[in-house]
Length: 547
Image (cartoon, rainbow, N blue to C red; front, top):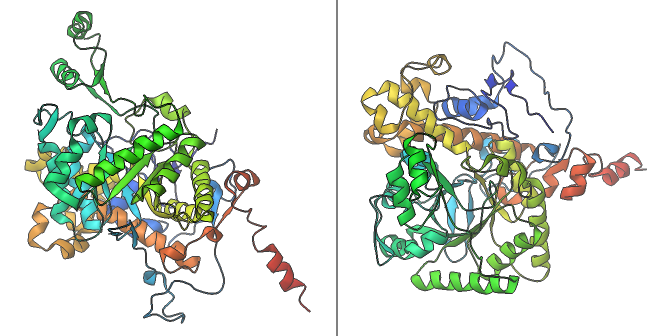
């Protein structure tokens, strides 16, 4: 098993716990005082691209070899001449071919095109309490930065204040809050996406959303995710709340209505109840039946009035992958998110996260292959977002390259949640009266933060940029977590621009598989991306043998 390093002396970052390939800790806690690369990027922004003690130190890469199959075993190609994708106003002169001139805006969709300032989106942030607690930061930040954010499953069903009539939702205050927080700062880029699972469909969430918000919202059908092969779950510590969820029709384990369970709860032998969602498509036995059911669901959503529909699928095998790609293409969906094993927001059974499903890189490589098959038959593949353990700008470049030209976005789960935690903790210290409201944990700024400054204008590299976007008067209403989100997104954007410029690609739509290579033969075999010394070897020989 590969052991990811926990400390990067060059960047001055360190993981509190075990590290993942993404660079995040396997367990990311909301009270963390730092400082992994993502955590630090929220504060210092693009400065984290470079080694610390700049000008007073030298640094060298520790990643000169790559072992095993994974995104870490893809390397980014660079070129010594040429340039493609420059804007019309620019020339191929060296004064114009600089990385700030790379265009990283992207778009996806069919009838309605959704534009994004940066090619990222969040994973689904649904009924988990972390999503609810930090939503103001998550959604405001996404809107200000101009990328899509997904309201995950079960938000309506677990809301004690929501009201159902005849089994259908008529009031959904938490869902309204989620949508309206994003729309408050929406500036024409990004999107708010609302996900549907079995319970959401039964509760009439799609009908509620279209009636109240129309096509300001994208609706998303859900087949699964990369972290687990069962429905979503949360844990609750209240017996009464567990009974409420049971009455709402959820699977609650252990059963809160069981007298023996109640006695065990009173004795504190049982302290939590797990609420689970149901599996979809359980009554279907063949792929033809799945297709018919899927197309019927899409047709119904279109009849309701939805013009933008997406699909989220998980780390299933090749049959399900092919189904997702083909059916999304046939239904002319706006986006298909393919989530590989290794991703998730950490609300899943641990050993399930560790052992189920197809890892991201091989799943994504197959997705590219299957899209090529459709294209060869004259069928337009859907616009795709790759998900599954991404956090850095090199991950974005590699994922977009691996799936090019079909990948338009990279979906991130845990990483864009970190700005919300961090910003809220800082806000709770600087504005003590806001500590409870923003769910801050800290009593004082830790040295990892205080070393950067005392005031938010000093601490957040993105403070002035956000103020320019929203206006000085509005800054008092912006959660610090949203400002941290801007710093993180800006670091990703700048890093991506630099990778693109090095590959001589000045717009996202010019990125291709020629811009990456495999660092070992095993990765070459599994992904179809050639080994690094094989690429352009024939051209090299022609140069050497030229008479």
